[in-house]
Image (cartoon, rainbow over all chains, first blue to last red; front, side, top):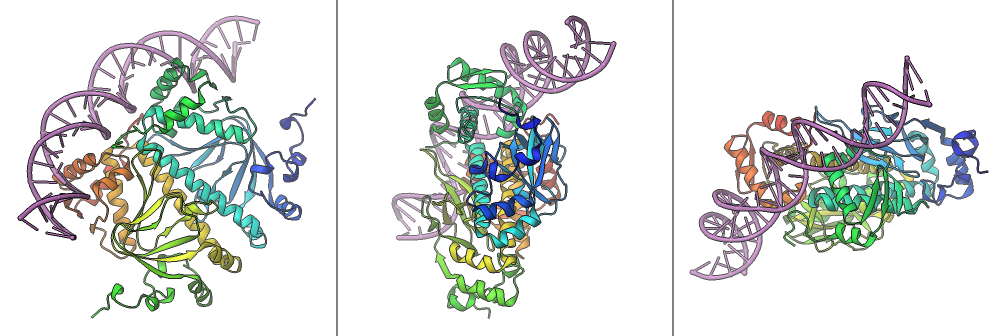
Length: 249
Length: 249
DNA sequence: CGGGGCATTGACTAGTGTCAACGTTCGTGG
DNA sequence: CCACGAACGTTGACACTAGTCAATGCCCCG
């Protein structure tokens, strides 16, 4: 019988060395000795319940976090405007990079379901990076990758139709699940339609309608939050289709 | 008579020590000795003519660049879709952070007018950062700041009306000019309406119409590419107004 | 002087947002 | 264990923002 993560003492389970996310996590490429030093600065994982906040907008920035299990969303509150969801985080992803060098955290990060995270106090991470060139490189790479992701998102938001946005979203999650060894064709949406809408710049009603349409067209099946992809290629074609908004070719 | 930058031998003019952008540039906070090491790795500035490319999408990533004068835009070409403008760069700003850790440059960067840039070969910058903790910190801070900017942009694109986007855009440029010691109330737009539209996720006709409306409302004057802000406060109010799209409060 | 890029303006319309009503699921507490 | 309420999701009707297409004018450069 496989021991269930949340039932066991988390302390031992979280040694990086033994962590199943090792291959996709920040310390990628560190040798064993370096990995141990890295391991030593991790604050032992914090369990979060659905809806619980990991950081709140405006909190003093102190740490990065890596998702170990579960999923989270980042959202920013603006001037009497509805909260805007800016990121979803899956296991192995790094939370908080946008707070570096700023006093306060840019947005709130909230668990979408039960989750565990590892905390990396940034000052200790910086000290360690001084001695470990590999770690430094990894940090740069992570931030840069995030910059590229954000830019892809900007392109998505400014140039594409609702259908294209949702196709990209569904495919993006699929890819991220695949990379984690989960099924890329059948997965669970831990976020609400409203979260998806906020993230994609659409009304939640539009999200619902477009997913319904995708289902009618047999591209996917959606049952509540369970999503199955039937026509991957068609979704890709849709997402990349030349005729977005202000297309002009 | 003030010597004009572009007429003099650029080699001497570009010593960081003497550079007027010193206070807003990457080596901020380095002591004199460190500054000299930093100076030593800079490839001497490249002049660019309007429309000339600094990097092309897909080029092998090798260097970061700092704008010394003039302005540039980054744009990414996607699958048979019109190019999408993702950034405008003003003097002192760092170009290319999104290429770190990737083999290829994410987008093309093109001069919007005559411009000079300093080239920082990344491998040499990394070596130097090993010895200079201050420089490391600056790099992190720059990347993180860019992450925050991109996120602000994502919020703008996904939640706000055309009027709000343009108000934010005009104010954002104003702020950036102010920080550089230029007039925040009267400045030159080096980009076309089409570039602005692409950047803001609007049709160029919409940009033109909204700027026209702002002018009718006496918020700004626009004559070609010369822009004057008359009612700063009103623009701020407009940009922050709670009723964007899918507002719901 | 002519041409090409850029900007403006108008007419029309498609795509989404908004509002509203209703259905479904889940969790809580009696 | 069941009943209730709240949160979430779906669907329809309608309105309106912003995109598209098209015509025209302006300005700079060769």
